[in-house]
Length: 359
Image (cartoon, rainbow, N blue to C red):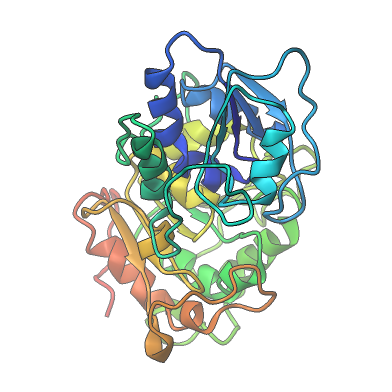
């Protein structure tokens, strides 16, 4: 079986329920996932993928070709999009059977209709249900990694995102980190490849709170630790420490990243793959949504995962998730909103040393 989902980490994790449904529905098959090479470890962690076939394209585009070798797959599954480009890519593999959504450009495929306002996890499970394959959108959890966390019990703050539209300002993340430190929490900053400069901006805002978000009760800097500013670190994932803030630059290897999240007190991030990782490990989280409603990409219902969303006059109509500037809806979220969500959260553990409540 060849499954196409050549997208990012969050897309893979949102597709885990569908992948597991395929594993159960086709127990005797080898399941080959066409996805970016860097997703091999999380794909394996899902327990639903036997082999990864490296495949990627800029943005969310469909790959031009797949390096498939050997006889045609018995079954191909389009978990990438609604066609027709992704359909035609898989049709070129000459599969015995193709499972996909219907599209006017490929009328020979008899599949269900695509619903633009459907949640991503539910969408792919509905596709499989249409073909008679039971699927559970809540089947999201990943097994706890077998390695220890590099920072057990810390609050993980991830300021990065693939696009500017989903990237909350660095000075606001710094204000959140200052508020957490005032209340005695240990904080970890994480970033992916190419986000070191962003991490430095957040770190500098923590140490020198003189930006537009510095005023009020959150603007009081925590004392600097004896270690000084975080070290730059030459290796990917190397952590520099300033008191109770640790910075992991360059992107942690997945096993260590997974261990960090599985052992975290809470996770704060934008609408990106990291938010889905918090859900996968059942860690309390606060996710900041901007151009896209949590109704399309948000966490499952319940109290463990908080989605902050201020749609304003534009309502739930999606903005451009790939825009260069922060979406206006994202900018309506303030640092106090994030801190209140964390401090009021019934499952976020309290630190040993607690400062007075946020005023």
